[in-house]
Length: 397
Image (cartoon, rainbow, N blue to C red; front, side, top):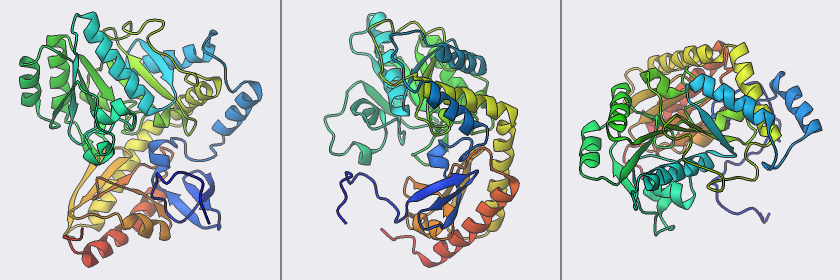
């Protein structure tokens, strides 16, 4: 059968039909436990009984409205995000890529407003910020960049968790205006920025009047057990891009900004057609409300700990397990060899997962995950990993 969809994804041989809670079914009726959550998007799982009627109500009222007009729900959701983050103002868009692109624009204009003609931004190895020309230039993955050169200039790339490298780069380069990083790298393999490094970056930015821009597109919205992953370090960024989990599946992005950055963009500097539309705003408002009502931050922390302990016990002494890392329900299990084959094997066993950075099993289940489901993830995954490590040689290309 000829497909008329561009060949941009290496898809598994299945199509999902519907879901309920943390379970989904394919078009053949096979059931799966969803350990991926739409890649950290389905915060409330599937068909949440409080979210569905709210979205049905909104669809019957208004789906889209131009930003020519006042937008009360934008004000409501922005106020909530500012309350949760301690920051001051929000710009709404539709995706994480757009949020990151907007953050880069803020950084450049922040520099130009200070008289810097060629502003530069510190970014990191293994980072992933999107696939537009600017965000893939900021991304630290040659595979993502290949074939799209020339890349956008103005980025200084450093290794993660190296404050001395940051100090040296800033000291020797007056054009640097911002430091841009994921609080926990997602696509790069679930690599957390250490707490003391986040605190050090905040100090460096304050000393040099730079913007600290923390990409929380994947690790934000309660996934780590706090509203935003940087809150574990007790700091605040100047700019925080959000997306994925904020709308529980409805496309939404946001740039949340503090005092140093909130007034950089003025009318005419930035805009969007779909950003801030009523359906997305209702999804965001209801998602945050339900998360609070159901105590999902504490649940994310507890269920993440339960999964990590279960996997560690199940794989204790197994050669080939390198590390289990992450926080809350953002978990990476690194093996010592490429493990892309586990994607299909897990699906055949009734479990949806992700493989990222070639050798890291990534788990990003819905924050409504229950203890029995956490145990089921462990029970399905551990035998697959044991068997894989026993039978697939380390040097397999």
